[in-house]
Length: 199
Image (cartoon, rainbow, N blue to C red):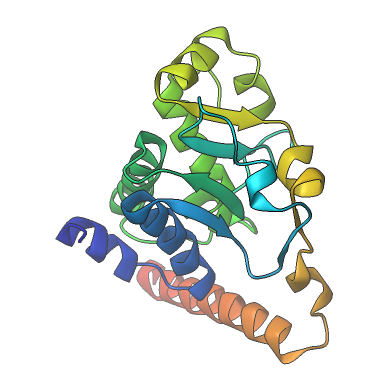
């Protein structure tokens, strides 16, 4: 259902969380539907907020700088989700894989920062800052053209769907340690390989 290029990029992702990020974008792009992380909670029934006839995609702000990728909704083949896939693939190809150069590298490759960049590209905004995209007249006009509805921070995080950010509370559980160990092991292996290359 996806090109060999997209599959190759997916196989380059070293962490389960990164594969989950790309998977959600791919599935909603291909099939359409509503996505929510496992630790998200429906505050209100979907049929009370998924109601706007002018919206083919619903995306909300997570923070001042980025749009939320733990909950969204779209019809199949929406251009924002196509752009998100293309942007992830492009980043992986350009970098020759994943380089964990800073603590938030997951956000840069598959998470909310790359998702925000895809929105910026689709809407031809002059900024990748989510708050500023919401005020960009050209971007908002282009959002109407692709029937993308962008919502303020409380749309997903408090009003309709809420994320409990469970992983932040898994400090002493096997779930937390699995995620931390996987990430730390990857960083350690990456640094070891870089050291070998430099000697």
